[in-house]
Amino acid sequence: MITLYGFPRTRATRISWLLEELDLDYDYQLINFNTLQHRSPDYLALNPGGKVPAVRVEGQLITESGAIVTFLADKYAEKGFIPAAGTLARVAHDQWSYFALSELEQPLWTQGKHKFALPKEQRVAEIFPTAEWEFQRALRLFSQGLGDQPYILGSDFQAVDVLLGHTLLWGLSFKQPIEQSNLQAYIERCKARPALQRAQAREKALLESLS
Ligand SMILES: N[C@@H](CCC(=O)N[C@@H](CS)C(=O)NCC(=O)O)C(=O)O
Image 1 (spheres, rainbow, N blue to C red):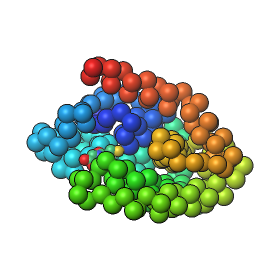
Image 2 (image 1 turned 90 degrees about the vertical axis):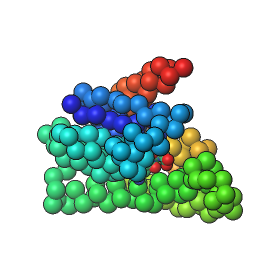
Image 3 (image 1 turned 90 degrees about the horizontal axis):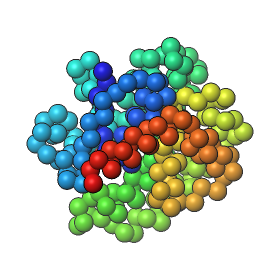
């Protein structure tokens, strides 16, 4: 059984979304951000970074959402969510995964860190216009790469689309304009995926269990 340590509306959604796409059973261990459980000695003993997502697979803890997504898609390669290693299709998959994590996500995370995640004395309000500009620049490149394909590698939804789709949804939640019509259509395709809807329903139930 795979254990996912996570909290709703965080990068943990990337993992629950992919697990649902892969149609795998998993145990969702809620790490309650509201009570700062991610900074508790117990969680830090498990995951010294104090972050989510983390997964435990066959007794090993794995962190970093990009590594988890790639690992799970590779481990269950027969389900068809990632091209084989060493192929040009795979490098395109990895290229867009790294783009999601370093170019598209980074300006959003910069905003998040300087709005709420960093200690107050480390926050720099002047950073926001630059981060917003960088996000728009990354959107233009993404839009160009997507063109008129349904998903980034073509007609099939792949693990990389979890990273890209989740990050676009994050952009919307941060009220960033996404004006490219092909990206808007891509977002709608992602939102319509039953696997994402199941992951979000599970998150909602977990949140409700806290109140
Ligand atoms: N690079 C990591 C980032 C993980 C991360 O920053 N997660 C956030 C939630 S989305 C977190 O756990 N924040 C808690 C904290 O920074 O104290 C990944 O992609 O998994």
